Every structure is written in C-alpha cells, then in structure tokens.
Length: 389
Image (cartoon, rainbow, N blue to C red):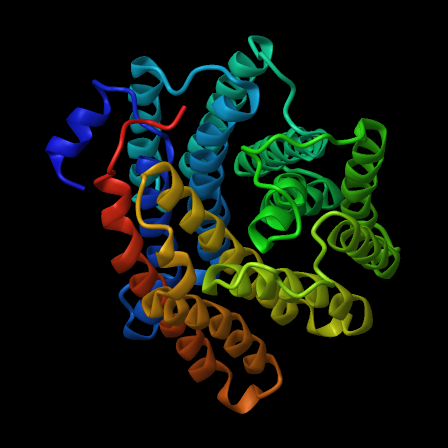
C-alpha cells in the first residue's frame, strides 16, 4: 500500500476490510515464509512464532476487517470514524513492529490491544443499533471473549509462572477457539447464503428467535476446550465434533450441494467439509493431532477465510461479481490453499520426508495466497464506489 493510500484512509471514511485484509494477507505470507527461511539459518525455529503470527496476525486481521465492515450493516449504524481508522492504523503498525523483538510479550500486548479496540468498536454499534444482529452472532461475543482471555493468559505467562492447565487453556483459546467461534457464529448466517441455500444477509428474511439455542451451543463449545486440558481429551474432541456437525447440518446446510454455480461457492463448501471432517479425525486419530489441526486451520479455516473475504471485497468494492463465478485465478489460488493443508497432513505420515513436506506445504500456501492476492488485493485498494454502509 502506498503512503498516499494510507493518508487518504485516515482522513476519509472507508470500509475496514480495505486496510485489515491486506495486513492479514501480508502476515499470512510472513508467518509461513519463516519455515522456508529456517533451513537457511535466516530465522530462529519458526515453531516458536508461526502459530502466534497466523492466529494473532493473519486470522485476527481478517476477523477485524470483516466484523468492522459487517457490524454497521447488521446493526444499521455507522461505519468506522476517522478517529477509529487512525487508531486501527496505529494498532496495525504496532502489530507489525511487535514482530521485530524476540520477546513474544510485545506481540501479545498488541493482540490484546486489537481485541480491546474491536470490542469497543462493536459495542458502540450494538448500543446504538437500529436492529439486532442475527442470533448466531452470540458466538462472536464468546469468540472475542475467548480470544482476549487466551491472549492475556499467554501475555502473563511471559512474566509469571502460570499453572500448566491454565496456560494450555490459554493456548487453546487463542490458537483455536476464538476463530472457530467466530466462524460458527458468522458462518451460520453467511455460509448458507453464499452457497445459495438461504437469502443473502442484506435481503429480508424472517427468522425464528434462537438466542437460547446459540447461547447453549456457544457455552458447550467453549466447555469442550476446558475439557481438553483435563484427562477427558477424547470426550472434548467428540463434543466439539458433534456441535460442529449439528451447526454444519442445521444452519450451514453443508450436506447440500451448493446451489450457486460459482468457484467461490464450491471452495467455500469444500472448506466447510475440511473443517468438519478434520474435527472428527481428531476423535479417532488423537495421536495425529498436530497434523490434523493443520487441515482444520489451513484447508478449513484458512480457505474459508479467503473465500468470505473474496465476497466482502467484491460486493463492498462494487466490483464485478462474475469473478466469483468463473475466475480461473480464484480457482487456482483456492485450490493451492486447500492443497497446502493436505500436504502438511502428509508430512505426519511420512517421517522420512517430514522436513521436505513442511517446505512443500509452506510453498503451496504462499503461492496460493500470492495468486489470490494478485486478484483481490488491488480491488481492496481501489474500489468502484463509496463505502457500503
């Protein structure tokens, strides 16, 4: 992004995805590039930083960009103010700078600040709402809460001795729970619409109140992570798989073939299946946990993130929506991202070529993000209409 674009962003009202998505894209590249630089002794062991950069950088930036863009629409309020945009840019700058020191405490501090900023932003719109957001968005509150609790625990662990169970719970909340909560909540309204099984969120739609149901589901979902730090790990994975299966069937309509004949819909549908099957694989193959998690996080959540970001970018930027339907660049980029998670899974089943498959997976992810970014990043910077709120 040019300096002129940054200055224009901080002085006029713009959709938040236009600066958070490119930031997340860059962090998604850097967090995986570490694995390619490591064999050349250019960086320290990536396992110490890679998970944090991906969850607190790549995913969190896309989460902020989406929620800050969607919240004004779902509450019929106002978009980012100039002051909020300046704060967002300051926090993004701080997030990038926090990667320079070796101490993780700087990074966790910036992640906490981003979560606090996001809560403040969402609460301002919610308190002045003209209508209520969908009931499934209760998961968003649970997810943001899990994210900030997890990041606070990890931040404190840099300075104090934290009991092992509390520390492990903090990692689970930060590295898994918060993103999955947000996907389950937002996805229950958005995914069926993008697959063609339900009206678009902007269209009128009568829905039965389901606040109690979603509150119960969200509580049980976080409970599954609490169980995971006890001796009942298998029960925790089983409970989580059952909950995701219920949501995927009842709300996502994942059992139905996409009615929208679009590359974006097919890959979004596929990412849902990677997520669901990965959760069940954890139940039956717990010894392969770290490898299966990469299918969930890469082929599942990572691919799902960029497919939803594709819709946000094209629709809010007033671009040609036919790109979703027939862009070969989009198809190839999404396919590479899906393949990256499966390549990483294969490393766990072939110990003699483990390191080489890590590199293959990293290269595939980076190539997929580059292809997707080649198509979409310019459309985030240059829109064809005013802000959409």
